[in-house]
Length: 81
Image (cartoon, rainbow, N blue to C red; front, side):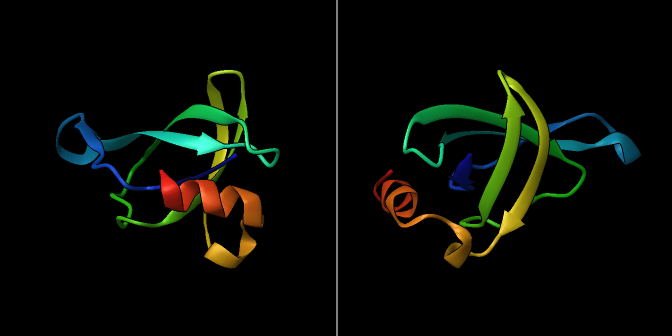
């Protein structure tokens, strides 16, 4: 699934245990719309593209990627969202 970080993260935890939770709208390679949730120990840059590997509502892995790595039909949906 692919998404763009276009909403601020929710900051959770205290001191050295701070996590940043992102709740985004993403799209599968087939263009199906899905809700994506993942967290990070660092705040990510706004407008970054992310690829998420998920099983159901569970995010297994996520990676910041370049725009050119996103299928054209999905990129169009992300830009219009």
